[in-house]
Image 1 (cartoon, helix red, strand yellow):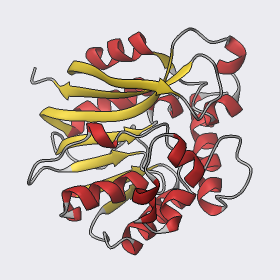
Image 2 (cartoon, helix red, strand yellow):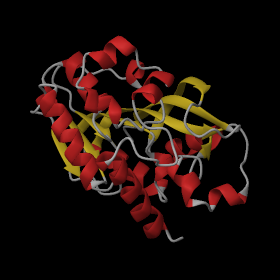
Image 3 (tube, helix red, strand yellow):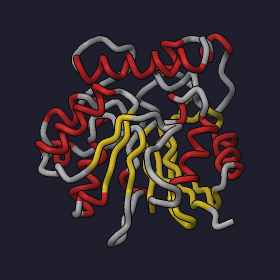
Image 4 (spheres, one colour):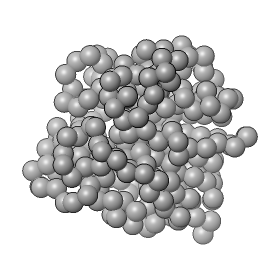
Length: 246
């Protein structure tokens, strides 16, 4: 499949999750999965049920994300808005927060979930991660929960993140990484792309790529068992990096 075909298929499949979260999608979806990757049941209870019903993230980046007064945050690939709702609750002033998702259906669900949770001032964009509709050096923090492994051009995504982050800004995200190389059949399977394993990088490769795209002080905050892909080589890493001043 071409990169465009992969991208379109990913947007379509995740749109199906938004439209029918209880359906068969080929990867885990929902509250049970959110708890499996580290979200506390009491935290999920405090949000509208739809926030966790459509959860599809790679892990839980919440502990790695901090926001200072007057800083602006974008959740890239925000899905149904679970992480964004929790950031809005922790950091107050949801008008400083925005989310972006490439699926029109998922972006609509995120907007509805934020409004239901009382955070309607947060802005939601429907756009590709390779084309963030914000000016240069606009953001202080970008966070994500499984974005690079779903993109057939992760280099373009990293370049775009570097463009919209201020020098010294922070990138904090959860991502499926590999502990060893995977077979070509997995790389070429669209079902494995949906599961976030077909496009996953080796952990050292991810770090090297971030450094090559304008980031420094790349820190693997944590790695743990992956509840999403079922592949023995996959782990979930929480990563933090700084947008270089140079």
